[in-house]
Amino acid sequence: MNGLKPVPYIVCKICKNVNSHFTDDCPRLICCCCLQSGHTSKKCLSKMICQICGQNSHPAAACKSENTTETRVEMNKVCILCNTKGHIAKDCGK
Image (cartoon, rainbow, N blue to C red; front, side):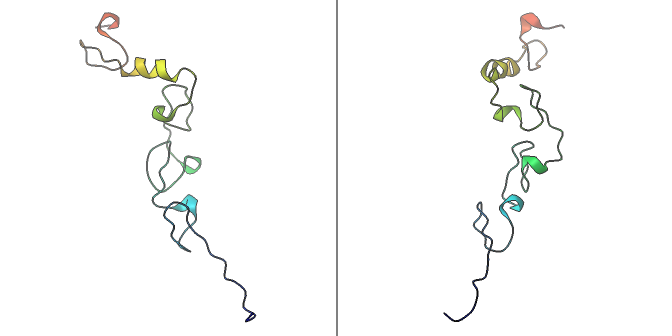
């Protein structure tokens, strides 16, 4: 051995860049809460609330709630009278 200690290095698990940034700080990281890049949901400043379960840790598209499927069906209904999502013509208040 030459007496030198190995130099520690950081490898980003997303972009594989060495000694540039930690994985949590990767600019290619996508937040599952606001769908913006550069941070995780833990560091997200967005006030987005899941329309299915009411939590603010994820958007409705990523919800794992038990009633996810039927709630998504209800959310995606579009009224032909008022062109609003969430109900159909027979339930329209207009």
